[in-house]
Image (cartoon, rainbow, N blue to C red; front, top):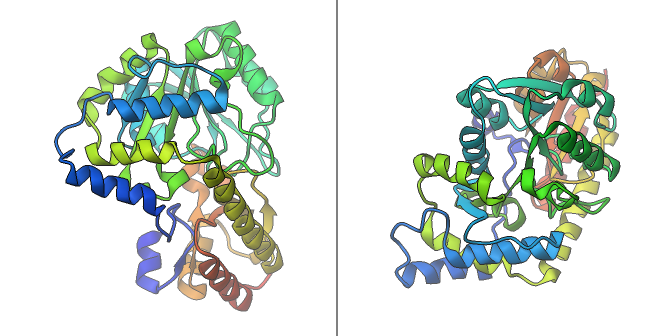
Length: 368
């Protein structure tokens, strides 16, 4: 869709990368690290200063004290943290539960690991977790469950009750949790809770995160996995043969970023919340059925009031005829039929770009 958008000069509200740059102090730290000669391989598990900064930030936000040497692994983005976790901790034919819709690398890396995937679908309007279905799906055969909150692509945040119920079932059935929390700083309507911080959960959880979304530096690909030593061992075995080590100078700069004052994160959330409100209200005005997000920088809409047969047809039409790009949700479901009425827009763009996209849609999209 991004390639098609470029061909037709469409405003790209599909792929989730900002069209503005990260903070100057972080970029300057990377430049200084390069000048200081930090240009050879980094330590495989991560530059020690970054590991310490990750531990400091995690303690501040969850209250958990983790060992930066034994319980933190720096990866090439959260996508590699996901892959290293799946490949390092899941054996062929072991069972893993996913919630659909899901970030597409989950099913791909589980396929590489040879896992048996069981999928539970979250449905609009609130995409709530069907706890009874999860209870009947989870068993002594289940090795792990993969969760993502705030959730891509829906923007859902788990309610306080949902992680507690998931945690209880995981403890009862001795199940691991792989928790993707890359949007944790973009939690608008409630506080983000790391499932690892719940009683009895740290020892069975891998918490995965990254720098890119929080600091608008998606191209740096700096991520990490936090886990107790017995799980970190598996993550590191896979990491050693995936990327071995991540970009050295960017790790030094990432440490500076994570030590940013609290005001940075407050301003980030305020800015994205304003962008969310602009896009949500505009999409409602155009005629979509909108499911407002509680977090992330994505919003899911039902496109069917506008008369196209499915998500792919709608996205192709809106790029070619309207000049705005969205993402069909077919890529986020194991059963494509479940997502055919839904498309995803992103609001990680400057306000002028969002308003230009909105004007194009208001002029050219009509409710059928």
